[in-house]
Structure formats: C-alpha cells, structure tokens
Image (cartoon, rainbow, N blue to C red; front, side, top):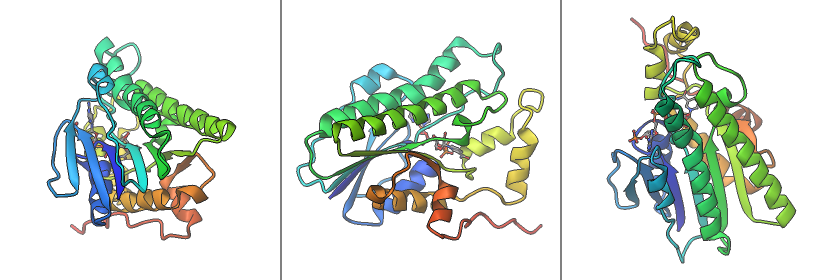
Length: 255
Ligand SMILES: NC(=O)c1ccc[n+]([C@@H]2O[C@H](COP(=O)([O-])OP(=O)(O)OC[C@H]3O[C@@H](n4cnc5c(N)ncnc54)[C@H](OP(=O)(O)O)[C@@H]3O)[C@@H](O)[C@H]2O)c1
C-alpha cells in the first residue's frame, strides 16, 4: 500500500489531491484538518487544529508494515488576516506562523524520525506559494512563513545529500487556484490590500487553476519524485517541463 498523510483535506487543493489519490485502491490517505468532509473506506480523518502546536506535538505517525511508499503533504494553509504590519494582533501572527510553518516543520521532523528505517519510498511535499518568493502587500506573516517552508525544504534536501538519506522533499507553489482562500482575497477592503483588483480580475478572466488540475500535477510529482532534482518549483513550471497542457483553468462563464 501507499500511505499519504495530507493536511488540509477538508476543502480546496488538499481535498482535490486526496480525491485524486483515493481513485487508486492501492492508496490510503490519512487526512488532517479541523473539519472532516471525506467519507470512504481508504480514507481516515485525524481532526487537528494546526494553530495548536501542543496538539501537533502530540500527533504520532503510524507504522505501516506493508508500505511501498509513504508521503507527507503539508498542504494546509491560511492567510488568516490581510493587514499591513503595525496593524496585526499578536495572536494572528502566532496563528499564521503555527499553521503555515511551525506545524508543518514539526510534522516533517516527526515523519523523518518515524520512517528513517523504512525501506519504501519516502516523500515530503510542502505546498508553498509565490508569496514565499515575492513580497505581497498585507501578507507579511504568510509570505514569511512560506519563505521559511521553502528554506527548510532546501536544507533538508541538502542534509539528505550529505548523509546519503533517502527522503525526497519538495516545496511546490500551486499557482492561483480557485478555492476558498481566493474568495477571501477578493472580499478584502481595497484600502487594506492594494492588489485586490488583480485577484478579482484573475477570477473574472478565468485565470484560476482548478484544484483538480493542481491535484493531478501533485500526483505526477509524487509518482516521479526520484527523477526530480529541484526542491523549489511551481506547478506551472513542472507542467511545462512535462509538456503537459498547462491549463485546465476554468472557462469564463458566458453571461
Ligand atoms: N488557492 C491559491 O490560490 C493558493 C496559492 C498559493 C498557495 N496556496 C496554498 O495552497 C494550500 C491550500 O490552500 P487552498 O487554496 O486549498 O485553501 P482553502 O480552500 O482555504 O483550504 C485550506 C485547508 O487548510 C486547512 N486548514 C486551515 N487552517 C487550519 C488549521 N488551523 N488546522 C488544520 N487545518 C487547517 C483547512 O481545513 P479546516 O478549515 O477544516 O481546518 C482546509 O482544508 C495552502 O497552503 C495555501 O497557502 C494556495
């Protein structure tokens, strides 16, 4: 069996990746998020609030004697509060770092500890963002967290080379995807977020990726993990490199 631990499976990209993987009976998914929305025999839900680091510290990965492949996908993420520095509450900065960075790093560390002696394929995929590479107005904590996720991934990859380790790790930006996160961005006050019109235009002009397309690219990355040398890349770059048609984006609805 192939075992996948995926955070943020209740909706959006994480749910689409999970549903894509569950089509194969050889895959078993353990989903981690606050809400549970998938009910099928090869899926198990573990309710966890990733802002609660003590709860994350108490989480244990299971041992799977029949594992051919074990994968951790750190997908859960939340911009939480779209405000400029100087206007945040302490608590939202802490929540942002916990959900988008600290909990993901704790899970990576536990995953590597638990499965260091397992002989099957061991893959970690972090769902990053262009926001970890380029500053975005009013997203400072989220940008900082995604940049941290990228750097942690690069260091782990470097360590695996130095020690001859057999974990593969990637930090992959999904592109602009039609999920609840995008809805939240479009609703923000223009005075608090200078790029709100860009995000409204992405939706209106049909420039958003569908979560199902992004999910199929993530599945392809996992299936070809041993052939990929890069650690940091985007869904769009990967799809182009595979000569895949980069766009099942949503068609613009005719009015
Ligand atoms: N959509 C985009 O355009 C875009 C662009 C770049 C990067 N990303 C990244 O892609 C990933 C998925 O985003 P999405 O667009 O699919 O967002 P989404 O539709 O809002 O889904 C977010 C998922 O994360 C989970 N989550 C959020 N806070 C959590 C918490 N405190 N504890 C546990 N789980 C939590 C949610 O589950 P519960 O609410 O049930 O807990 C949900 O399943 C994120 O890492 C995001 O940063 C998205």
